[in-house]
Amino acid sequence: MIIAIDGPAASGKGTLGKRLAAHYGFRHLDTGVIYRAVAKAMLDLGADLQDEARAVAVARALDPEKFGDPVLKTQAIGDAASVVSAIPAVREALINFQRQFAADPPGAVLDGRDIGTVICPDADVKIFVVADPKVRAHRRTLEARGRGEAADEALVLTDILKRDERDKNRAAAPLKCAADAHVLDNSNLDIEGGVRAAIAIIEQARATR
Ligand code: DC
Image (cartoon, rainbow, N blue to C red; front, top):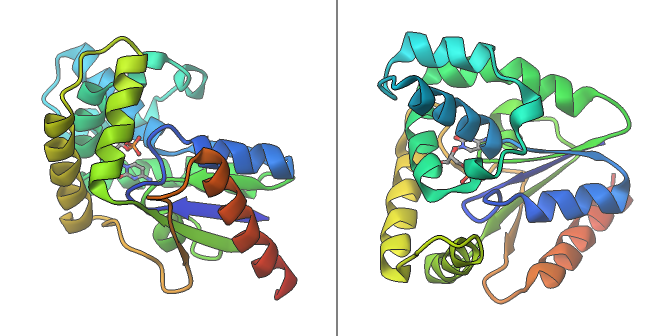
């Protein structure tokens, strides 16, 4: 079984996907981390983020063992990831890895921006997670402070809006809700509430399959 979690409020920390995977005994991939890893490698090389040939080479050479590096979660890497993820050839280079991950037994939860539309269009259940940008800014600010980073909530909000625009309007795999996705608005839900709502969607989808 493949569960696709997309949407502007979906990935970030990958908490929802991780919790769902644990609940069902599936493997979990927070695909934002892949783009963040490409971005970090480009910054480490001192490369221009728009340098397609280098970014593709970096994407092909990624080491999944390093996806847990906490530095990948920072705002600076997230901004750089938004730039490299807009390069079609970079996305192309990462498709097989994601599809293979999804196909391996016993089942998988993938979260990102284009899982239900491009990577796994035949996913068994698709959930598109949205939340009020102000609520997301508040959450991200608290997270950043929890990591010991200074964070100005107004700036975080500006950054979120800018990044959403870029993700939605890029030519390659723009962020959009798949026609058969279930929309989950978690503005007024805490993590537990979001997990419960997602499980309810999945159970209903399984029952009607
Ligand atoms: O979800 P995140 O903040 O970790 O994602 C970082 C960037 O990577 C974000 O700007 C969008 C991009 N991304 C993407 O284009 N496709 C995905 N499947 C996941 C993330």
